[in-house]
Image (tube, rainbow over the protein chains, first blue to last red):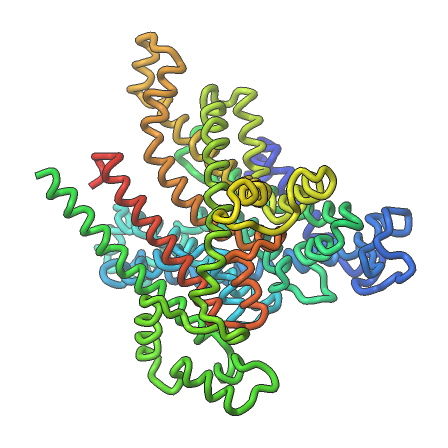
Length: 278
Length: 317
């Protein structure tokens, strides 16, 4: 998609444009976290715990007297890094496996497909928790686990797409001209999977974000003192009776970001699909 | 003739489920192999005695070839012996038997809420696509899908339990002790769990209804002057029924996953808390046991749904 087409599309789809703008702003915030956050992550103001919002602390302080706004900003980098890591791993595992199954067909496809079915039978977060338990807790291990758990979804998508494209006339023609399987895979099958994969990756980023929040909330993800929005909710949960308002900022941030990824993904699906009438 | 075809279909479905089951159990057992370093030393934890490490090596048969280990684990698992917790020494099957009913109760209640609210909302949205009601339902549904359900659970606890005192904030009461008490405890967890489900059901039902209602046969019915209500009920919902079964099956799988985090908020001693605590302390037999039972349940439910399809929709071979 050229820049011009991208801009035309964004102008025609307000929700997609808003989502993209929000996500870009969040990315800038995450990258510039050390410059933007007024306080370091672990800086404590021990005389001023669970304080209400004020000029000094825009979103108040937590139970250890740490500035909530600063932790939200730092949490954004942890959260985005975690989502990107999980989806990257899912892509790294799912794309080649799906292409292999779809290109080779036959018993290879049967074996891979049954394995995908088996992995998809696991309730996703449960398997992620189990894998994290085996690998050892921590944000990176947790996100490797989530990536492994998400990979069959991408593999299945890529396989289905490759199976369809394999039957196309132009692929047959190129085979008749003596193109090798490797060449067909590289020149025809891979490029044709790009669009559905982009859509799925955007939607998976939302799912990975929610998975990170869940794992960190349960204590299996990010470890203190580093914050992520999920672990901030865990602290807010512990102080729920004293300061219930602590739960709103991290929760809203998770909700809005997941919503933005989902909205963008759905809009991309419509925009990239040649069969939808607009 | 018909009966024999149906039996053949059932046999084929069962045969298809078998490799999935075998591979899934292989994955559960394989969790052990993901552990870094010497498994026995890692599992024994810090300050373990030489004897403890030896015990664990024996327990898992770690000196034997991998496939032999897997085979004996599988045979034991299907006989109900899921080994013992490394932390407490309690048989894993016993812990699961205690935890599973609590989880099942909130999952089943949440299923009821998701279908009970999701279906009417889906019908409402599809009755006039792109109308005001449709826009409202679709927007609320996107929120429902993006909301972290444990956060929703916290909000429900803060507002309805702590502030208003309408519901207990934590805990679960087994059904057999007191049915009203048990339901009273389960309502908030089920509501928090169901949010995503309501959204999913209404969205899927809406999109399949919109497709059916704009199809040529339905257009003909409308041209003949059949009322919108009759069309929606008799032709729309009936045809969407099969899709609805797919949605409900997927929903069950999702709820079983989501309940893990929601249980933590309500301190319900269900499957979720069992596996989370086990993962935090690297109590691998418990982790494997919970995952094993959950995947078994999911595969059984999927199989049941597959068999139901053949009854509901005669076109499906």
